[in-house]
Image (cartoon, rainbow over all chains, first blue to last red; front, side, top):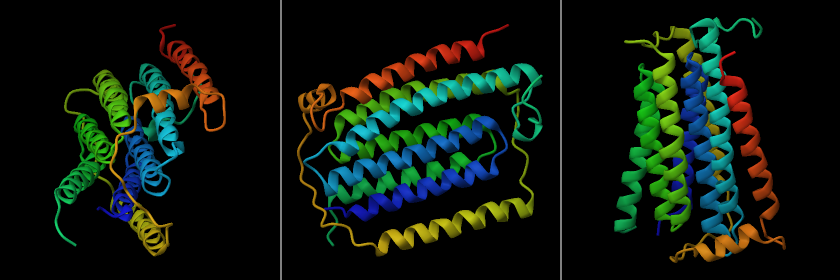
Length: 102
Length: 169
């Protein structure tokens, strides 16, 4: 049997890789990809806690299910905003975003 | 600790996820970052399958790997020009990011590995889709009909908002 901590180590590493990407990348889409990594690692944590600590209940399962749906919605809106930004300033670098109103 | 097939599968999945995640945030071409993100999502689905949550793995493959990644690839193709590369990071920024991340990773791992969790046990057995459906639709205790309805309204609002933001004026 695989210990629960191994899964948690994987998700922790994934979370901090995502945070590193969010801090260092300058492209808005690359930052969004890093956010996606963070969300995914939290999903793994929910599932693992549900499976190993409370196997007869379903809370973690449903949290993950809803988190996947919400992150899909978040990505759709964020990409719509990014495409709108690109249409206005022809660039999606975070440092060229100095004002929010054109 | 003897080496079982389960352990081998887990090790392969963990290495796959870790390497792909690191490559996704360090590669300089954004389209490759999206591809590595797809690999990470596949690995996560593999972990769900290994934990006997097949329904969740299928949802992960359908929504994340099938939907979100395609959305990323299309928006990357729309917004980046040929041969677009991220510039190199300046030294102090790289060290600040890397240092802060490694420090927090160390603290988190230390706290987590020292913590005594409740006795964990893992029994094999598939979670039936019937159970999931009954829990998702029941208004009783441990039922999820209210979040189900709320997320449907949220998705509708997202569709409207996405169209409103991205349309041409």
